[in-house]
Length: 92
Image 1 (cartoon, rainbow, N blue to C red):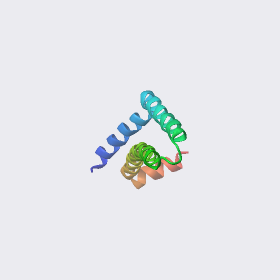
Image 2 (image 1 turned 30 degrees about the vertical axis):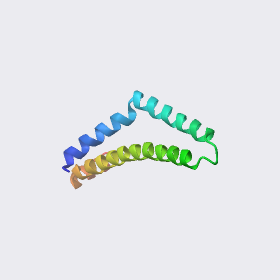
Image 3 (image 1 turned 90 degrees about the vertical axis):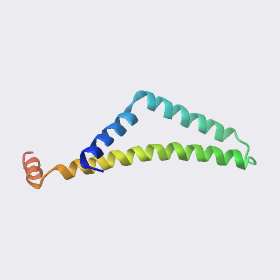
Image 4 (image 1 turned 30 degrees about the horizontal axis):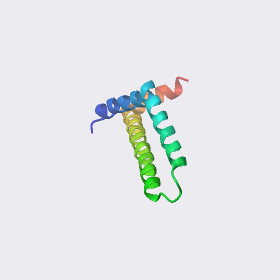
């Protein structure tokens, strides 16, 4: 993937994670899964497994977005030339 595309993709991922609606949705999903997990009987292994898998999917989704953001940060750093870096460091 090209550097510019990676940076744009990172911006989209950050916008999604920071979106108030996504924050509301993910918080509600996590709370719902937690309540269900606490309510499931210890003998209901299938139910426990399904809830754990649902939590893992939600975590993987957010991890994927965080990796995209990190990739964008790395791509931005690659755009900074050594001269520009020195100018930024010594300008402080």
